[in-house]
Length: 188
Image (cartoon, rainbow, N blue to C red; front, top):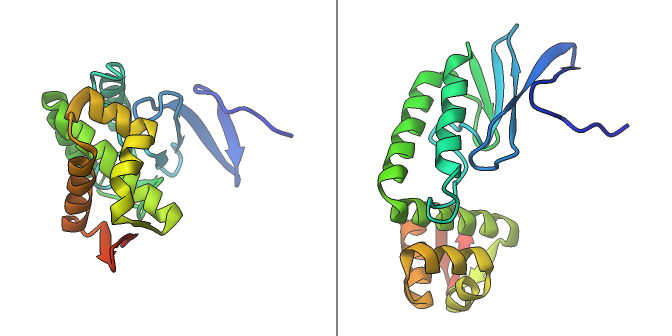
C-alpha cells in the first residue's frame, strides 16, 4: 500500500520510531526523518557534512533561503548523534556541519551571485553524474537551451552562454568535481 509521508507524523520502520519533520529550503516540500531513541537524523538534502542541497537565488525564490535557515535551526534544536545525509558519508560532528551550513547561508544571503554560481555548478555536476560526459563545445548551447541555467543566468549572472559554460567548467575543475579529457567534460 502506498502512503504519503507528512510532516508531524510518526512511522515505525525497522522496529524504530521515526518522526517526519518538515525541512523546506532546497525543496520546499522536503522532510527529514528523526529517531530520538538512537538520535539518528536522515537529513536528505537539508544538511550535508559540508553544506546542503542548492537553493535557488533569492531574486527567483525569496522564500527558499529563510526556509533553509529555519530548517537548520530545527535540526540544531534536535539531539542528533549521527546524520545520514542524502549525499556523502554519514557523520557525527553535527555542530561543525551546522556551523558550515550557517556560514554558507549567510554568505548566500549577502551575495545572490555566489548562490547562483553554486546552484548552476551543482546542477552541472549532477547532470554529469547521470550523463557521464558532455562535449565542452556543446556546453554553451546547453546552458542557453536548458531553462534553469538560462533563467538563473538571466536573473542573476547575466553572462554570455560561452562565458557561463567556461566559468562552470573552470570552477568545477578547480574543485576536482569534474575532469576534462579530449574535449569532453566528465564527472570526477
